[in-house]
Image 1: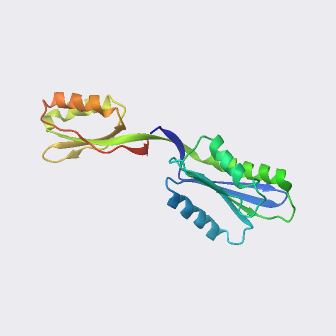
Image 2: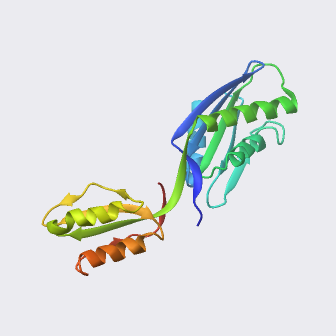
Image 3: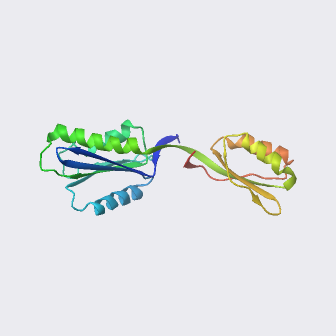
Length: 205
């Protein structure tokens, strides 16, 4: 599966148009359950708001959006388009509207929801998600420095070593790139050390 872009944590942005307040919140959500939980939390926090419009796009292809009582295609669709335009997945954006007493018209609503959603996404921290595998190897103290140097020559995220009767090294590496390093470590230890490789999963890298 391909790498993709998402956001880290949450972000918030406020926009005002003719006394209506639009409060946009963007959040990372890699499952539908997380997306809906975030939506429910925003709704609970804004029970007196006229509308809680939302859209989310998941990496697995799941897409949902809602105008939440606004005229069709004036709210949820613009929010969804903002997410798509940003090239993001595993993201939900909820835009809460507190009505200011002045009607905005369909064009005004589209502009306002677009501005709010785009502002929240611009305020968010972008993250590249890659498929990675977690690896580990246990080596004698005499081979620790050489093993560490080998690992650090590759594109990895190396954890702190664990010192016991021997040294355990753990690292994360892009999926598909672990083979050459495993072979090098096997040569270093003359086959005595076996590298364990976990299943591929997505992670910020």
